[in-house]
Length: 273
Image (cartoon, rainbow, N blue to C red; front, side, top):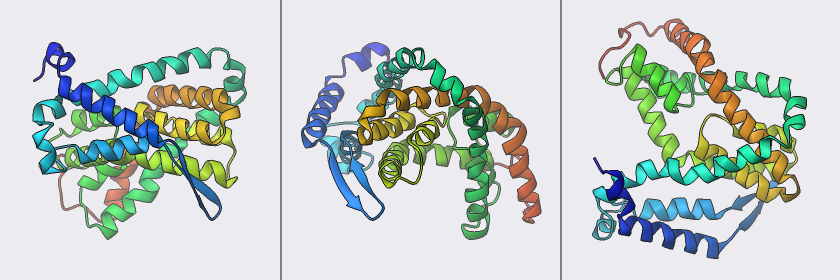
C-alpha cells in the first residue's frame, strides 16, 4: 500500500498527468455533427484515452514508464482531483437555490430512474448473457460505492452477487465518464430534452460521471452553465441521500423477485463465485 508521502513524491505519475492534461487541452473541443445532434469531444475524453494507452495493464510497453506502483497511487488521487469541481458546485447551489426548489418534485421523482438498470439490464443479463446470480449484483443499481456496500453487507464480495457488482463497478469506472460525456453532448444538441432535465440526469451518484456529464452540457450550452452545474450538483447530492435507501428497500428486493420469476432458482443467495 502506498503511503501519502509516496503518492505526493511520485514524480512520474504527476509528470504523466501534466503532459496528458496539456496535450488534451491543446487538442481542444471537437464538434462532430451526426444526424439529430452533434457529439462534442472534450479534453476529458482525450485524457481518458491517453490515460488508457499509458496504463501498463492495458498497453504492456507503457510499463517502461509507469509501473504498478504508479497505477495504485493514481486511484486515491481521483477523489482528490475531483474535489475542486465538487467545491465549485457548493458555491453555485446556494445562489441557485430557488431554481432547485422550483425543480423539487422533478429532482425527487428522477430517483425512480435508478430502477431503469433493472428494467433494461437485468433481462439482457439473464436471458441473453446467461448470467445467474451475478445478474442481481450487476443490474440492481449503477454499481457505485454505496451499492457495493449493500452487496458486501448482504452477500459478501466473494459471492456471485459480489462478482456482478464489482464487474459493473470496474467497467463504470473505466468507461462511465466517456459514455456520459458523449451522451450528454449528443442529447444537448439534439433538442429532444430540456437542458434542465439533462442536468438533473447527470447526478447519478458518481462524482466523475457527473463532472463529465455536466461539463459536456455546459460546453454545449455555455449560457446555462450555472443552472446546469447547480441542478447536477443538487441531483447528485439527492441521489447519495435517497438512492441508497431506494436500492436497499426497492431495487434489490425487486431484482431478487425478478430472478425467481425468471425461473433462476438453481443457485443459493450469496453463493461463492
